[in-house]
Amino acid sequence: MPVEKPAFQETNLWSTPIRDLGLTIAGTRLEPVIAQFERELALAGIRRLRPRFYLSTEWGVPFETVAIAIPFYLASPELTAMHADQVGVVEGFDPEDILRYLRHEMGHVVNYAYCLYDTEEWVKLFGSITQPYEEEYTPEPFSRRHVRHLPGWYAQKHPDEDWAETFAVWMTPGLDWRAEYAPWPVARAKLAYCDRIMHDLADREPEVTDDELDEDVGEIDYSLAEFYDETPSGGDDMPPGFDGALRAIFDDLSRGAANGSELLPAAGLFARLERDLMGNVFRWTGHFPERTRQLVRHLAERATTLEQGYPAARERQAEVAVTTFVTALAMNHVHRGSYLP
Image 1 (cartoon, rainbow, N blue to C red):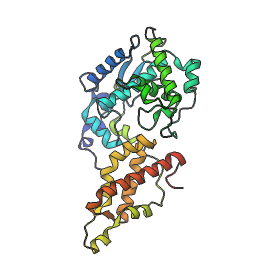
Image 2: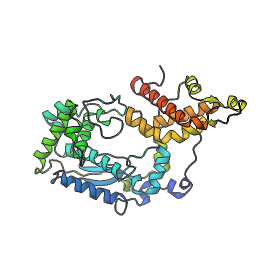
Image 3: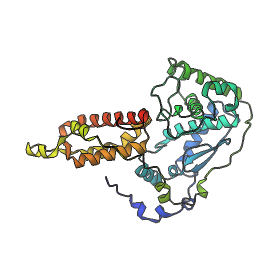
Image 4: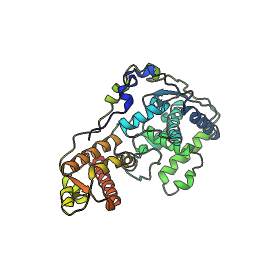
């Protein structure tokens, strides 16, 4: 399905090196959010450790530093809208979501600042930090060994992420983690460790204070066009075999016309659901948003080729059927490596 480029892609903004866009945290919506986050740190009893915040290409904390990278596109409403158009999902779509990511990244800061990953108890609870870090991982939905914070069961990706997610849950204001995770003994034990160790560290100076930046926005010499050209497309080519399922969900447009009933094109429904499916399917299955976008667009193309549609009166049923179908395919891909056997 062809996608129209936003108007600003035809302007110099699209081809200008990112370092020349003049992006900063100061004076943007990020500034009051970071101020709120710093108040949260104080309320959590974190007095001796203050991270450095900067803009980069994605969320992250360079290993053995106390510097938190924030995606540059969050510093500009226009760039945030552009990122949503290009990628489909914005990690930090509103102030509360930005805080959610900041709490997670602060977990990495604490880990590196106090070298927790080198302690016997941390390794026993979370695993070895030297474990290979794989971008592709196979989460177990609703695993009681891990907390839930970022989408995609992110705590299951790596021991370092397991700790960062545990810390983020512990730090979240107003969350009663003891009650929330009472039926989950392993996750609760990790949270109890976090609670105890953070009280022990409250008045200790950090062992690591390096705040060197990795790919600071002021040094990025490539353009937005080049940045998004390098964004993963979403996976392998789609396999055949979806047509029967599409026909089970929708009706033939020609048959509807012959019966005198007007049907809406199925492709329009896929386009309308695409953004929500990308975010929600990732949250509950771990199937990456870019893969879901590719899958949804492929299904829309097949539905168009097959001339499939649905009556307006059955739109809700069609939405539920499409959502269920895409989720089932996503689960197959996460756990089997392919959408179809």
